[in-house]
Amino acid sequence: MANGTKPMRTLGGLAAFALPAASMLGLLLVWQVYTNAFEVNHFILPSPLRVLNAAFGFGLPLLGHVWTTTYQILVGFTVGNLLAVIIAYAIVQSPVAEKLIYPFLIVSQTVPKLAIAPLLVIWFGTGLTPKVIVIVLLCFFPTAINVVQGLRSTDPSAVDLVNLVTSSKRTLFFKVQFPSAVPYFFAGLKISMAAAVIGSIVAEWVSATSGLGYLILYGGQTMRTDLMFVAVLLTVVLGLVLYGLVAGAERLLSWKVAEIGGRAA
Amino acid sequence: MTDSQAAGTVPPFVSFEDVGLTYAAGTSSAVEALRNISFGVGQHRFVSILGPSGCGKSTLLRLLAGFLRPTAGRISVGGVDPEVARSTGMLGVVFQSPVLLPWLRVIDNVAFLLELKGVARTEREAIAMQFIDLVGLRGFERHMPYQLSGGMQQRVSIARALAFGPSVLLMDEPFGALDALTRDRMALELLDIWKRDQKTVLFVTHSVQEAVLLSDEVLVMSPRPGRISVVRPVALGRPRSKAQRHEREFVEHCKRLFDDLDADAALGV
Image 1 (cartoon, chains in turn cyan, red):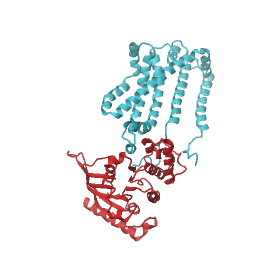
Image 2 (cartoon, each protein chain N blue to C red):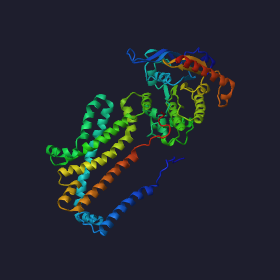
Image 3 (cartoon, rainbow over the protein chains, first blue to last red):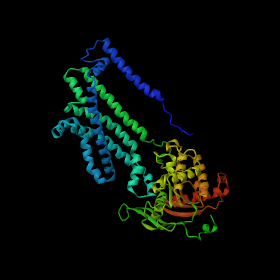
Image 4 (cartoon, chains in turn cyan, purple):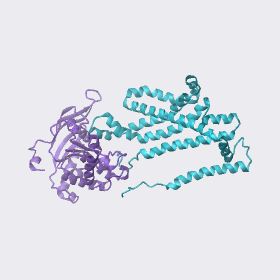
Protein backbone atom coordinates (compact mmCIF):
# COMPACT_ATOMS: atom_id res chain seq x y z
CA MET A 1 0.00 0.00 0.00
CA ALA A 2 3.07 2.24 -0.04
CA ASN A 3 2.08 4.00 -3.24
CA GLY A 4 -1.58 4.22 -2.33
CA THR A 5 -4.48 3.22 -4.48
CA LYS A 6 -5.02 5.50 -7.43
CA PRO A 7 -8.59 5.74 -8.74
CA MET A 8 -9.09 3.66 -11.88
CA ARG A 9 -8.40 5.55 -15.10
CA THR A 10 -10.45 4.67 -18.13
CA LEU A 11 -7.50 5.28 -20.44
CA GLY A 12 -3.82 4.52 -20.06
CA GLY A 13 -1.35 7.42 -20.33
CA LEU A 14 -0.30 6.50 -23.87
CA ALA A 15 -3.85 6.14 -25.21
CA ALA A 16 -4.88 9.39 -23.54
CA PHE A 17 -2.20 11.17 -25.53
CA ALA A 18 -2.15 9.10 -28.72
CA LEU A 19 -5.88 9.15 -29.50
CA PRO A 20 -6.32 12.95 -29.70
CA ALA A 21 -3.07 13.19 -31.69
CA ALA A 22 -4.32 10.52 -34.11
CA SER A 23 -7.63 12.31 -34.66
CA MET A 24 -5.81 15.60 -35.36
CA LEU A 25 -3.44 13.93 -37.82
CA GLY A 26 -6.44 12.26 -39.45
CA LEU A 27 -8.08 15.64 -39.97
CA LEU A 28 -4.93 17.05 -41.61
CA LEU A 29 -4.68 14.01 -43.85
CA VAL A 30 -8.31 14.27 -45.02
CA TRP A 31 -7.79 17.98 -45.62
CA GLN A 32 -4.65 17.36 -47.73
CA VAL A 33 -6.24 14.55 -49.74
CA TYR A 34 -9.40 16.59 -50.30
CA THR A 35 -7.58 19.66 -51.67
CA ASN A 36 -5.44 17.46 -53.96
CA ALA A 37 -8.21 15.20 -55.23
CA PHE A 38 -10.71 17.96 -55.99
CA GLU A 39 -8.07 20.51 -57.06
CA VAL A 40 -9.50 23.12 -54.70
CA ASN A 41 -8.38 26.66 -55.50
CA HIS A 42 -5.71 27.48 -52.94
CA PHE A 43 -7.15 30.98 -52.58
CA ILE A 44 -10.33 29.36 -51.18
CA LEU A 45 -8.71 26.56 -49.18
CA PRO A 46 -4.93 26.06 -49.16
CA SER A 47 -3.72 22.54 -48.41
CA PRO A 48 -1.88 21.84 -45.12
CA LEU A 49 1.40 21.50 -47.02
CA ARG A 50 0.87 24.89 -48.70
CA VAL A 51 0.13 26.41 -45.29
CA LEU A 52 3.31 24.86 -43.92
CA ASN A 53 5.21 26.21 -46.90
CA ALA A 54 3.80 29.70 -46.32
CA ALA A 55 4.88 29.53 -42.70
CA PHE A 56 8.47 28.71 -43.64
CA GLY A 57 8.36 31.29 -46.44
CA PHE A 58 7.40 33.98 -43.90
CA GLY A 59 10.30 32.88 -41.75
CA LEU A 60 11.51 34.34 -38.47
CA PRO A 61 9.25 37.45 -38.40
CA LEU A 62 6.46 34.97 -37.65
CA LEU A 63 7.94 34.43 -34.19
CA GLY A 64 7.75 38.19 -33.59
CA HIS A 65 4.00 38.09 -34.26
CA VAL A 66 3.57 35.08 -32.00
CA TRP A 67 5.47 36.87 -29.23
CA THR A 68 3.39 40.07 -29.55
CA THR A 69 0.19 38.10 -29.04
CA THR A 70 1.65 35.87 -26.31
CA TYR A 71 2.98 38.86 -24.38
CA GLN A 72 -0.40 40.62 -24.53
CA ILE A 73 -2.17 37.51 -23.34
CA LEU A 74 0.24 36.93 -20.45
CA VAL A 75 0.03 40.53 -19.23
CA GLY A 76 -3.77 40.69 -19.60
CA PHE A 77 -4.27 37.26 -18.04
CA THR A 78 -2.07 38.08 -15.04
CA VAL A 79 -3.62 41.47 -14.39
CA GLY A 80 -7.16 40.19 -14.99
CA ASN A 81 -6.80 37.24 -12.64
CA LEU A 82 -5.08 39.21 -9.88
CA LEU A 83 -7.99 41.61 -10.11
CA ALA A 84 -10.41 38.67 -10.05
CA VAL A 85 -8.96 37.22 -6.83
CA ILE A 86 -8.99 40.63 -5.11
CA ILE A 87 -12.59 41.26 -6.20
CA ALA A 88 -13.66 37.77 -5.11
CA TYR A 89 -12.01 38.22 -1.71
CA ALA A 90 -13.75 41.58 -1.21
CA ILE A 91 -17.13 40.16 -2.23
CA VAL A 92 -16.85 37.26 0.20
CA GLN A 93 -15.53 39.36 3.09
CA SER A 94 -18.03 42.20 2.95
CA PRO A 95 -21.72 42.25 1.95
CA VAL A 96 -21.37 46.00 1.28
CA ALA A 97 -18.53 45.38 -1.16
CA GLU A 98 -20.62 42.67 -2.81
CA LYS A 99 -23.51 45.09 -3.39
CA LEU A 100 -21.12 47.76 -4.70
CA ILE A 101 -19.13 45.49 -7.00
CA TYR A 102 -21.76 43.19 -8.51
CA PRO A 103 -23.33 45.75 -10.88
CA PHE A 104 -19.90 46.40 -12.39
CA LEU A 105 -19.27 42.68 -12.74
CA ILE A 106 -22.51 42.19 -14.66
CA VAL A 107 -22.05 45.32 -16.81
CA SER A 108 -18.48 44.31 -17.65
CA GLN A 109 -19.86 41.06 -19.04
CA THR A 110 -22.78 42.53 -21.00
CA VAL A 111 -20.64 45.20 -22.69
CA PRO A 112 -19.63 43.84 -26.12
CA LYS A 113 -15.84 43.87 -25.94
CA LEU A 114 -15.44 44.25 -29.70
CA ALA A 115 -17.68 47.34 -29.61
CA ILE A 116 -15.66 49.17 -26.98
CA ALA A 117 -12.27 48.26 -28.43
CA PRO A 118 -12.29 51.29 -30.84
CA LEU A 119 -13.21 53.50 -27.88
CA LEU A 120 -10.23 52.14 -25.97
CA VAL A 121 -7.99 53.08 -28.92
CA ILE A 122 -9.23 56.69 -28.69
CA TRP A 123 -8.55 56.75 -24.96
CA PHE A 124 -5.33 54.78 -24.72
CA GLY A 125 -3.78 54.90 -28.19
CA THR A 126 -2.66 51.98 -30.31
CA GLY A 127 -0.10 50.47 -27.92
CA LEU A 128 -0.29 47.60 -25.49
CA THR A 129 -2.75 49.22 -23.06
CA PRO A 130 -6.06 48.95 -25.00
CA LYS A 131 -5.32 45.31 -25.86
CA VAL A 132 -4.55 44.42 -22.28
CA ILE A 133 -7.77 46.12 -21.15
CA VAL A 134 -9.85 44.07 -23.59
CA ILE A 135 -8.16 40.87 -22.37
CA VAL A 136 -8.60 41.84 -18.71
CA LEU A 137 -12.30 42.56 -19.30
CA LEU A 138 -12.76 39.14 -20.91
CA CYS A 139 -10.77 37.05 -18.50
CA PHE A 140 -11.35 38.37 -14.99
CA PHE A 141 -15.03 37.45 -14.83
CA PRO A 142 -14.85 33.61 -14.96
CA THR A 143 -12.13 33.55 -12.31
CA ALA A 144 -13.89 36.05 -10.04
CA ILE A 145 -17.19 34.14 -10.12
CA ASN A 146 -15.48 30.80 -9.54
CA VAL A 147 -13.32 32.01 -6.68
CA VAL A 148 -16.35 33.59 -4.96
CA GLN A 149 -18.10 30.25 -5.20
CA GLY A 150 -14.98 28.45 -4.00
CA LEU A 151 -14.45 30.67 -0.98
CA ARG A 152 -18.11 30.20 -0.07
CA SER A 153 -17.83 26.42 -0.44
CA THR A 154 -15.71 26.21 2.72
CA ASP A 155 -17.16 23.59 5.08
CA PRO A 156 -18.63 25.49 8.08
CA SER A 157 -17.33 22.71 10.34
CA ALA A 158 -13.80 23.39 9.06
CA VAL A 159 -14.27 26.98 10.23
CA ASP A 160 -15.30 25.66 13.67
CA LEU A 161 -12.22 23.47 13.62
CA VAL A 162 -9.90 26.44 13.11
CA ASN A 163 -11.80 28.37 15.78
CA LEU A 164 -10.82 25.67 18.28
CA VAL A 165 -7.30 27.06 18.08
CA THR A 166 -7.48 30.63 16.87
CA SER A 167 -9.97 33.31 15.89
CA SER A 168 -7.55 34.89 13.42
CA LYS A 169 -9.29 35.66 10.10
CA ARG A 170 -5.93 35.57 8.35
CA THR A 171 -5.19 32.04 9.51
CA LEU A 172 -8.68 30.95 8.52
CA PHE A 173 -8.25 32.43 5.03
CA PHE A 174 -4.80 31.01 4.30
CA LYS A 175 -5.21 27.64 6.00
CA VAL A 176 -8.78 26.76 5.02
CA GLN A 177 -10.73 29.18 2.82
CA PHE A 178 -8.14 29.74 0.10
CA PRO A 179 -7.07 26.07 -0.18
CA SER A 180 -10.77 25.14 -0.33
CA ALA A 181 -11.19 27.48 -3.29
CA VAL A 182 -8.15 26.25 -5.26
CA PRO A 183 -10.02 23.76 -7.53
CA TYR A 184 -12.59 26.49 -8.29
CA PHE A 185 -9.75 28.94 -8.95
CA PHE A 186 -8.24 26.64 -11.56
CA ALA A 187 -11.63 25.97 -13.18
CA GLY A 188 -11.90 29.76 -13.56
CA LEU A 189 -8.33 30.10 -14.83
CA LYS A 190 -8.92 27.59 -17.62
CA ILE A 191 -11.99 29.43 -18.94
CA SER A 192 -10.13 32.68 -18.42
CA MET A 193 -7.14 31.55 -20.51
CA ALA A 194 -9.36 30.54 -23.43
CA ALA A 195 -11.07 33.93 -23.23
CA ALA A 196 -7.72 35.76 -23.07
CA VAL A 197 -6.62 34.25 -26.40
CA ILE A 198 -9.84 35.40 -28.10
CA GLY A 199 -9.49 38.82 -26.48
CA SER A 200 -5.98 39.28 -27.80
CA ILE A 201 -6.95 38.46 -31.41
CA VAL A 202 -10.06 40.65 -31.31
CA ALA A 203 -8.14 43.58 -29.83
CA GLU A 204 -5.54 43.35 -32.59
CA TRP A 205 -8.25 43.58 -35.24
CA VAL A 206 -9.07 47.10 -34.12
CA SER A 207 -5.58 48.52 -34.27
CA ALA A 208 -2.26 46.74 -34.38
CA THR A 209 0.97 46.58 -36.32
CA SER A 210 1.99 43.15 -35.12
CA GLY A 211 0.53 39.96 -33.69
CA LEU A 212 -1.39 36.91 -34.89
CA GLY A 213 -4.70 38.83 -35.07
CA TYR A 214 -2.97 41.48 -37.14
CA LEU A 215 -1.52 38.75 -39.39
CA ILE A 216 -5.01 37.32 -40.05
CA LEU A 217 -6.25 40.76 -41.15
CA TYR A 218 -3.11 41.38 -43.20
CA GLY A 219 -3.53 38.01 -44.96
CA GLY A 220 -7.12 38.91 -45.80
CA GLN A 221 -6.21 42.34 -47.18
CA THR A 222 -3.38 40.96 -49.32
CA MET A 223 -5.36 37.93 -50.59
CA ARG A 224 -2.96 35.55 -48.81
CA THR A 225 -5.36 32.86 -47.62
CA ASP A 226 -2.42 30.60 -46.76
CA LEU A 227 -1.01 33.27 -44.45
CA MET A 228 -4.41 33.61 -42.75
CA PHE A 229 -4.33 29.86 -42.15
CA VAL A 230 -0.82 30.09 -40.74
CA ALA A 231 -1.96 32.75 -38.27
CA VAL A 232 -5.15 30.90 -37.32
CA LEU A 233 -3.31 27.61 -36.77
CA LEU A 234 -0.59 29.32 -34.74
CA THR A 235 -3.33 30.90 -32.62
CA VAL A 236 -4.78 27.44 -32.03
CA VAL A 237 -1.37 26.06 -31.06
CA LEU A 238 -0.71 29.06 -28.79
CA GLY A 239 -4.11 28.57 -27.17
CA LEU A 240 -3.43 24.87 -26.60
CA VAL A 241 0.00 25.52 -25.10
CA LEU A 242 -1.24 28.24 -22.75
CA TYR A 243 -4.26 26.16 -21.71
CA GLY A 244 -1.93 23.20 -21.19
CA LEU A 245 0.26 25.29 -18.90
CA VAL A 246 -2.75 26.19 -16.74
CA ALA A 247 -3.94 22.57 -16.70
CA GLY A 248 -0.40 21.43 -15.79
CA ALA A 249 -0.23 23.92 -12.93
CA GLU A 250 -3.60 22.60 -11.77
CA ARG A 251 -2.29 19.03 -11.67
CA LEU A 252 0.69 20.15 -9.62
CA LEU A 253 -1.08 22.47 -7.22
CA SER A 254 -4.71 21.46 -6.88
CA TRP A 255 -6.19 18.67 -4.77
CA LYS A 256 -8.73 15.89 -5.20
CA VAL A 257 -12.08 15.99 -3.44
CA ALA A 258 -12.75 13.17 -0.96
CA GLU A 259 -15.43 10.99 -2.49
CA ILE A 260 -16.46 8.89 0.49
CA GLY A 261 -17.73 10.43 3.68
CA GLY A 262 -16.37 13.79 2.61
CA ARG A 263 -19.45 15.69 3.56
CA ALA A 264 -22.38 13.91 5.14
CA ALA A 265 -25.86 15.15 4.30
CA MET B 1 -13.97 5.79 37.11
CA THR B 2 -13.92 5.82 40.87
CA ASP B 3 -17.04 5.41 42.96
CA SER B 4 -16.71 8.87 44.47
CA GLN B 5 -16.99 10.38 40.99
CA ALA B 6 -19.97 8.28 40.16
CA ALA B 7 -21.64 9.34 43.39
CA GLY B 8 -21.04 12.97 42.54
CA THR B 9 -19.02 13.98 45.60
CA VAL B 10 -16.38 15.57 43.35
CA PRO B 11 -17.59 18.79 41.69
CA PRO B 12 -18.47 18.05 38.06
CA PHE B 13 -15.88 18.83 35.40
CA VAL B 14 -18.50 20.03 32.95
CA SER B 15 -21.60 21.72 34.29
CA PHE B 16 -24.72 23.32 32.87
CA GLU B 17 -26.79 25.40 35.30
CA ASP B 18 -30.27 26.32 34.15
CA VAL B 19 -29.01 27.00 30.63
CA GLY B 20 -31.39 28.35 28.00
CA LEU B 21 -30.93 29.47 24.43
CA THR B 22 -33.44 31.55 22.50
CA TYR B 23 -32.72 32.68 18.95
CA ALA B 24 -33.83 36.20 18.04
CA ALA B 25 -34.93 36.77 21.65
CA GLY B 26 -37.39 39.62 22.14
CA THR B 27 -38.68 39.60 18.57
CA SER B 28 -41.84 38.07 17.13
CA SER B 29 -39.73 35.39 15.42
CA ALA B 30 -38.05 34.28 18.66
CA VAL B 31 -37.35 30.55 18.76
CA GLU B 32 -36.59 28.82 22.04
CA ALA B 33 -34.03 26.12 21.24
CA LEU B 34 -33.07 25.00 24.75
CA ARG B 35 -34.73 25.48 28.15
CA ASN B 36 -33.62 24.83 31.74
CA ILE B 37 -30.71 22.57 30.91
CA SER B 38 -28.92 21.48 34.08
CA PHE B 39 -26.48 18.62 34.45
CA GLY B 40 -22.96 17.82 35.53
CA VAL B 41 -20.36 15.47 34.09
CA GLY B 42 -17.53 14.12 36.24
CA GLN B 43 -13.95 14.04 34.98
CA HIS B 44 -13.07 11.08 32.71
CA ARG B 45 -16.71 10.08 32.42
CA PHE B 46 -18.36 9.02 29.18
CA VAL B 47 -21.77 10.66 28.88
CA SER B 48 -24.16 10.37 25.94
CA ILE B 49 -26.77 12.87 24.94
CA LEU B 50 -29.65 10.97 23.37
CA GLY B 51 -32.67 12.36 21.61
CA PRO B 52 -34.61 12.60 18.36
CA SER B 53 -33.53 14.85 15.49
CA GLY B 54 -34.08 18.52 16.13
CA CYS B 55 -34.13 18.30 19.93
CA GLY B 56 -31.09 20.54 20.27
CA LYS B 57 -28.40 17.90 20.96
CA SER B 58 -25.93 19.48 18.56
CA THR B 59 -26.83 22.96 19.79
CA LEU B 60 -25.96 21.85 23.29
CA LEU B 61 -22.56 20.70 22.07
CA ARG B 62 -22.01 24.00 20.24
CA LEU B 63 -22.75 25.86 23.49
CA LEU B 64 -20.25 23.66 25.28
CA ALA B 65 -17.62 24.39 22.62
CA GLY B 66 -18.23 28.11 23.02
CA PHE B 67 -19.37 28.50 19.39
CA LEU B 68 -22.70 29.76 20.75
CA ARG B 69 -23.48 31.76 23.91
CA PRO B 70 -26.44 30.79 26.10
CA THR B 71 -29.14 33.42 26.59
CA ALA B 72 -29.76 32.16 30.13
CA GLY B 73 -27.84 30.26 32.78
CA ARG B 74 -24.19 29.34 33.15
CA ILE B 75 -21.89 26.78 31.56
CA SER B 76 -18.52 25.83 32.96
CA VAL B 77 -15.82 23.50 31.68
CA GLY B 78 -13.03 22.66 34.09
CA GLY B 79 -14.12 25.62 36.19
CA VAL B 80 -13.95 28.18 33.37
CA ASP B 81 -16.15 29.65 30.66
CA PRO B 82 -16.41 27.52 27.45
CA GLU B 83 -14.75 30.22 25.36
CA VAL B 84 -11.82 30.32 27.77
CA ALA B 85 -11.69 26.51 27.80
CA ARG B 86 -11.61 26.52 24.01
CA SER B 87 -8.92 29.16 23.71
CA THR B 88 -6.72 27.23 26.14
CA GLY B 89 -7.06 24.06 24.06
CA MET B 90 -9.15 22.07 26.53
CA LEU B 91 -11.74 21.11 23.95
CA GLY B 92 -11.58 18.56 21.16
CA VAL B 93 -14.41 18.20 18.68
CA VAL B 94 -15.33 15.32 16.37
CA PHE B 95 -18.00 16.25 13.87
CA GLN B 96 -20.58 14.03 12.17
CA SER B 97 -18.56 14.17 8.95
CA PRO B 98 -14.78 13.76 9.19
CA VAL B 99 -14.11 17.37 8.04
CA LEU B 100 -10.67 16.42 6.75
CA LEU B 101 -8.84 19.01 4.70
CA PRO B 102 -8.65 17.26 1.31
CA TRP B 103 -5.41 18.96 0.28
CA LEU B 104 -3.48 17.61 3.29
CA ARG B 105 -2.05 14.12 3.84
CA VAL B 106 -3.37 12.07 6.76
CA ILE B 107 -0.43 13.02 8.96
CA ASP B 108 -0.86 16.71 8.20
CA ASN B 109 -4.58 16.48 8.90
CA VAL B 110 -3.92 14.88 12.28
CA ALA B 111 -1.28 17.53 13.04
CA PHE B 112 -3.40 20.40 11.64
CA LEU B 113 -4.56 21.86 14.97
CA LEU B 114 -1.03 21.58 16.37
CA GLU B 115 0.23 23.43 13.29
CA LEU B 116 -2.24 26.25 13.92
CA LYS B 117 -1.05 26.30 17.54
CA GLY B 118 2.50 26.85 16.29
CA VAL B 119 4.04 23.49 17.26
CA ALA B 120 7.23 22.82 15.26
CA ARG B 121 6.97 20.38 12.35
CA THR B 122 9.07 17.52 13.71
CA GLU B 123 7.36 17.66 17.08
CA ARG B 124 3.82 17.81 15.73
CA GLU B 125 4.52 14.99 13.27
CA ALA B 126 5.81 12.82 16.10
CA ILE B 127 2.65 13.49 18.10
CA ALA B 128 0.47 12.89 15.04
CA MET B 129 2.17 9.53 14.36
CA GLN B 130 1.43 8.45 17.92
CA PHE B 131 -2.30 9.05 17.45
CA ILE B 132 -2.37 7.62 13.92
CA ASP B 133 -1.04 4.49 15.60
CA LEU B 134 -3.67 4.70 18.32
CA VAL B 135 -6.56 4.74 15.82
CA GLY B 136 -4.97 1.88 13.87
CA LEU B 137 -3.95 3.76 10.73
CA ARG B 138 -0.19 3.16 10.76
CA GLY B 139 0.97 2.89 7.16
CA PHE B 140 -1.65 5.35 5.91
CA GLU B 141 0.00 8.54 7.20
CA ARG B 142 1.06 9.65 3.71
CA HIS B 143 -2.27 8.88 2.07
CA MET B 144 -4.62 11.60 0.96
CA PRO B 145 -8.14 11.70 2.46
CA TYR B 146 -9.81 10.68 -0.83
CA GLN B 147 -7.85 7.41 -0.72
CA LEU B 148 -9.49 6.37 2.57
CA SER B 149 -12.87 4.79 3.31
CA GLY B 150 -15.48 6.67 5.34
CA GLY B 151 -14.61 4.78 8.53
CA MET B 152 -10.89 5.43 8.10
CA GLN B 153 -11.57 9.12 7.47
CA GLN B 154 -13.54 9.33 10.70
CA ARG B 155 -10.64 7.65 12.54
CA VAL B 156 -8.32 10.33 11.18
CA SER B 157 -10.68 12.96 12.54
CA ILE B 158 -10.70 11.26 15.97
CA ALA B 159 -6.89 11.12 15.90
CA ARG B 160 -6.82 14.82 15.05
CA ALA B 161 -9.09 15.66 17.99
CA LEU B 162 -6.95 13.57 20.39
CA ALA B 163 -3.58 14.80 19.08
CA PHE B 164 -4.61 18.31 20.09
CA GLY B 165 -4.52 17.00 23.69
CA PRO B 166 -7.91 18.20 24.94
CA SER B 167 -9.28 17.17 28.33
CA VAL B 168 -12.87 17.16 27.05
CA LEU B 169 -13.90 15.44 23.83
CA LEU B 170 -17.15 16.59 22.22
CA MET B 171 -18.49 14.13 19.66
CA ASP B 172 -21.47 15.05 17.49
CA GLU B 173 -22.90 11.79 16.06
CA PRO B 174 -19.41 10.86 14.87
CA PHE B 175 -20.51 7.50 13.47
CA GLY B 176 -23.80 8.74 12.01
CA ALA B 177 -22.60 8.60 8.41
CA LEU B 178 -21.13 5.09 8.66
CA ASP B 179 -22.68 1.73 7.82
CA ALA B 180 -23.94 -0.40 10.73
CA LEU B 181 -21.00 -2.84 10.86
CA THR B 182 -18.32 -0.15 10.73
CA ARG B 183 -20.31 1.82 13.25
CA ASP B 184 -20.26 -0.97 15.88
CA ARG B 185 -16.57 -1.62 15.39
CA MET B 186 -15.73 2.07 15.66
CA ALA B 187 -17.79 2.41 18.86
CA LEU B 188 -15.82 -0.36 20.57
CA GLU B 189 -12.53 1.06 19.29
CA LEU B 190 -13.55 4.42 20.70
CA LEU B 191 -14.00 2.79 24.12
CA ASP B 192 -10.49 1.32 23.90
CA ILE B 193 -9.05 4.72 23.01
CA TRP B 194 -11.02 6.41 25.76
CA LYS B 195 -9.72 3.90 28.31
CA ARG B 196 -6.09 4.43 27.28
CA ASP B 197 -6.24 8.16 26.67
CA GLN B 198 -8.38 9.27 29.62
CA LYS B 199 -10.79 11.98 28.55
CA THR B 200 -14.13 13.36 29.56
CA VAL B 201 -16.42 12.52 26.64
CA LEU B 202 -19.75 14.05 25.67
CA PHE B 203 -21.21 11.96 22.90
CA VAL B 204 -24.28 13.04 20.94
CA THR B 205 -26.26 10.24 19.31
CA HIS B 206 -29.76 9.25 18.30
CA SER B 207 -28.98 5.55 18.66
CA VAL B 208 -30.18 3.99 21.93
CA GLN B 209 -27.91 0.92 21.61
CA GLU B 210 -24.88 3.08 20.92
CA ALA B 211 -25.63 5.23 23.97
CA VAL B 212 -25.98 2.18 26.25
CA LEU B 213 -22.92 0.42 24.83
CA LEU B 214 -20.65 3.42 25.36
CA SER B 215 -21.83 5.45 28.31
CA ASP B 216 -21.61 5.78 32.05
CA GLU B 217 -24.68 7.96 31.89
CA VAL B 218 -27.28 8.91 29.28
CA LEU B 219 -28.98 12.31 29.14
CA VAL B 220 -32.31 11.92 27.35
CA MET B 221 -33.47 15.06 25.55
CA SER B 222 -36.89 15.98 24.27
CA PRO B 223 -37.68 18.59 21.65
CA ARG B 224 -39.50 21.94 21.34
CA PRO B 225 -37.95 23.45 23.34
CA GLY B 226 -34.95 21.18 23.83
CA ARG B 227 -34.63 20.06 27.43
CA ILE B 228 -33.30 17.14 29.42
CA SER B 229 -36.23 14.93 30.31
CA VAL B 230 -34.36 12.29 32.29
CA VAL B 231 -30.83 11.22 33.22
CA ARG B 232 -30.22 7.46 33.18
CA PRO B 233 -27.07 5.92 34.64
CA VAL B 234 -25.85 2.87 32.73
CA ALA B 235 -25.10 0.23 35.36
CA LEU B 236 -23.14 -2.14 33.14
CA GLY B 237 -19.62 -3.35 33.82
CA ARG B 238 -16.60 -2.46 31.76
CA PRO B 239 -14.95 -3.31 29.47
CA ARG B 240 -17.99 -3.53 27.26
CA SER B 241 -18.21 -5.93 24.36
CA LYS B 242 -20.35 -6.65 21.34
CA ALA B 243 -21.71 -9.83 22.94
CA GLN B 244 -23.12 -7.85 25.86
CA ARG B 245 -25.74 -6.34 23.64
CA HIS B 246 -27.81 -9.50 23.75
CA GLU B 247 -27.69 -9.84 27.53
CA ARG B 248 -30.78 -9.12 29.59
CA GLU B 249 -29.32 -6.18 31.49
CA PHE B 250 -28.27 -4.42 28.28
CA VAL B 251 -31.64 -4.99 26.64
CA GLU B 252 -33.46 -3.68 29.72
CA HIS B 253 -31.36 -0.50 29.70
CA CYS B 254 -32.28 -0.03 26.04
CA LYS B 255 -35.94 -0.68 26.70
CA ARG B 256 -36.05 1.90 29.48
CA LEU B 257 -34.47 4.53 27.20
CA PHE B 258 -36.86 3.67 24.37
CA ASP B 259 -39.73 4.15 26.83
CA ASP B 260 -38.27 7.52 27.87
CA LEU B 261 -38.09 8.62 24.24
CA ASP B 262 -41.61 7.37 23.54
CA ALA B 263 -42.99 9.19 26.56
CA ASP B 264 -41.41 12.41 25.30
CA ALA B 265 -42.79 11.85 21.84
CA ALA B 266 -46.28 11.29 23.26
CA LEU B 267 -46.03 14.56 25.22
CA GLY B 268 -44.60 16.43 22.28
CA VAL B 269 -47.42 15.72 19.84
